[in-house]
Each structure stands twice: as C-alpha cells, then as structure tokens.
Length: 328
Image (cartoon, rainbow, N blue to C red; front, side, top):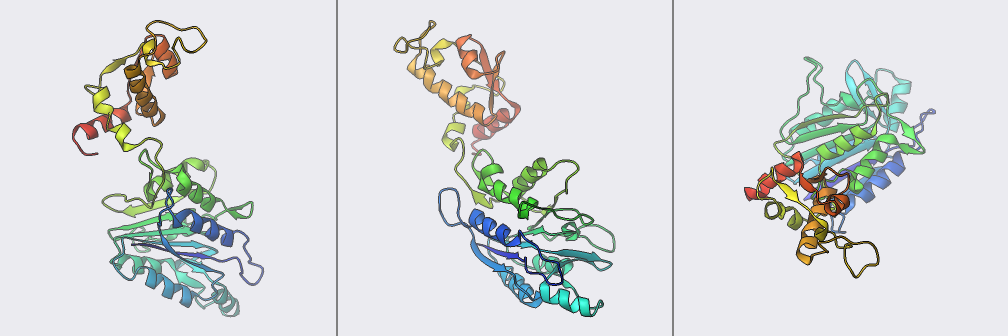
C-alpha cells in the first residue's frame, strides 16, 4: 500500500499570498498517482488552501498511522524559523501570530519528525518546498539529524535559505515532477527518493538554493516505475556477449545492418550478417544506458564499419557481475 498527503497553500492573509503552490500540488498529484504503464501508484489525498494547522496535523497523523509500504508527505507553502526551529505556516495561525507574537505560527517541523519517527510505516518520505525547509530533522541540542529507520527527507533548500517560485510554480517542485516523469529513472525504470535528489541536485547551479537530503534506510525502494530504456532481458545478455567483464568485443562491417547489397550505398565486405546484426543491436542498446562503449571511435557505427572494438564500461562491468552471479 502506498499513500501520499499533498498540501499546498496560496491563500495566505496579510499580503503573504503565494502563487504556485496549488499548481505544484496538481502537477505532483498527476506525476505520483500512476506508474509509467498507467497502473495505480499512490493513493493520494490533496489538501489545497487548508487554513488550520490542527486540521493539517490530524491528516499527517492519519497518513503515518499504520504499517503501509510507503507514506509520503509533501508541503508547498510558507516556512518560518525562529529559536524553536522550523515551522510550516498555515493561514489561521498566521492571523493569530499577527495578533499575538507569542502564539504558535504553525506546525513545528520537529512535530512532523516525531510523528514519522514513531510510525510503523515501512518507508516514510517527507518532502518540503518552503523556506527554511532544511531545518527539519535537525536536533537543536547537538545540531545533528535524528531519523528513525525508514525515514527519508527531501527539502527545497537549506535551513537558512528561501525557496524560489519561478514562472508561477516552485522551482524545486518543477524539478521534482520532472524527476518523477522519468528524469530520475535508473536503467530499469525505477525512480527512488535517492535518484530524485540526485536529479534535482544536478539541475540546480552552485549559486541556486540547495536541496537537502537526509535518509536512514537499508535500501531504496521505487517511489514510481516508468518504462525502462532497455529491458532486463537485454541486460541479461551481458554475459553471453562478453565472456568476462574485461573482454574487448571485436567488430567488423558484418555487424552493421545497413552494410547490405540491398541498400543503395557503398558497402564493405564482410556484408551484414543476421547473427552479428542481432548482437550489434543488443550492444547499441547497452551503449544507450552507459554499459558499453566503442574503442577507438566515437560511435558504434564507425567502430563496426572500421573493424574496431567495443568494451564494457565500469558500470557495465558491475552489471556483468550481477548477471553472472544471478542477482538480476
């Protein structure tokens, strides 16, 4: 069972309105709800312009209340930080704070951590797109993070940074959605929270807001699956194509299917051979995911036509061993 709670708030009082949070929730709902093949992924509850922090807290507690496989909490709105730590801001609490500065301004990030840390859900994911979001999970006593097993946190920025809106939506969430649409997928089409962080981190410049990622898991499980570029069946051909991971695979023009007398252009002996062409297509697919590279040529086509070689990359050698050991 996988469920998600998405909260987005634009409608803040006292001139504190935001403009992209509702669109962020809508886009993330679409990206999370189904896998790449159309099968159901997350069962999602979206709360937009929720006014009261007590209502939000009740929904957060419900999200993490049992032993589901994954529970994901996402917040897009205002964040605030003071001597007591970071807080998620809600409209009614902001009004109370304006009238009485000693009043609580929202939900303490530490409260959310307490709920997640005590949950029996197997994998708990917290994603915050708000200012000062990086404060979540930080212990105010020793300035370290305390995450129970199974908890992962991904935030738009550090504790002392603001989260940017760009073109009517959050910059961080735009990248998050892009990652879920396939940008963060591994060779097998699996999208994990670690892969999402890596994708967002690569996409932001050194002078931009910096995402924060904290996790305490023994393994990453897929948040979503999309169609892989290359099937697992092709990857399992690594050991049949290469006797050992260091082998250089000899190529010649017979591997290139366009090198045929039936096609009107210059051809080179030996002409295209069906068995070799089949192997070459597999090698080209493996090259597309970084497992194989030509030797002495930039492209596989010229490696074949000029009778050069190809070899496994370091990543290809790693997966050759996994196939050889029957681990995939």
